[in-house]
Length: 510
Image (tube, rainbow, N blue to C red; front, side, top):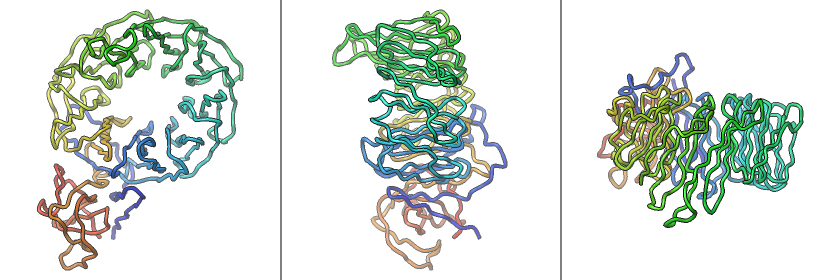
């Protein structure tokens, strides 16, 4: 006999399906199989805004409550192989940020007064320390052995050994704004420029002076180029420097003016940016023109520091610079459509006839642009062919505030984060057929909850309003309410599942 195990937390209840071993690879979602994509499951968090992130290997999904809205103190780790809750991490104060280790074996958690390292293999804390003040972003070294945590009050950057839990080294600066790590260099931005610290030898190997504060620093994935971002005011401008780490010289400097201060209630600023893995292409969208239009996307050739192309201004807010995984394609939101552009030339490849979307993401191979379109009714999750601009699929889901959409690192799953609800899409396999919990609503004012899927079973209570549905019985006559550990009559006259077909729910046996 198989047993259904329900996991209860203070703010929501999730009932997962049967666990499976990883015997087969999960199919990568492409334009060729987009019509096979289905809603695999949902995880429901009532009245809570959620921040979600995949582990680098795609095995785990973390979610936690946005601390500035509702001060809950739990982090939930979901196992994507079994579509079930893997860990619940209870904290003494609300989480501010989390970062997965590049090895996907642990994750760093920052609250207001502590930094903790959670081991995903042992489900336990292995490191904890208290900074003097709130921290700057947490950063792992590329091999995952060190964790950098900067204290902007002291100001000091602490380097912690992930394996031993001991402090590896620290670097004190006169001020501290941002930092990043490559395989042996810590780059720290401050009000006077950039300091480069070799954390293997423990020596400062170089400093680069600037006339303006360095607010952001990023290494390319191969670690050979450092990008710095600075800002000046009155007039407002963005200054990007691309620094060769081997020679400690600037490869190029690019300055973009994006406004003269406050204009019609708007102010120039960077919405988002992206640096390609090889360090040769940089893109950003920044600032607001005097007309109130967003200035569009600028693509820069890093070796020369020259602009390859710029997209036209638009009243459509581009919430992200959307690049394909291989940096071949760029998705640009305009007033009437979403354009798919070639990253090298700026040539338009196709157009998608959607004039509004809450979020977009490219599939692993770039053949699909996934769009969350709240004007799509019960089918807001749309998959579009980037080569032809035709719609490949429209999937059931829900749109709320603070929506986001992203593919898992292995390309086999699509995550939609819609406020209270995490929705996971993919191609069903022998392993990946189980739902988490699907939101439903009791159609009449109240119906009976029964201990088993039978009209002869004991009535254990009554239910009305919103519910979480975990599965169905073999005859499709009853639904299991994972939110109440009982069974109710199926059918729209009893429970409204929205656009989710009852046949797509997993069969559960008591």
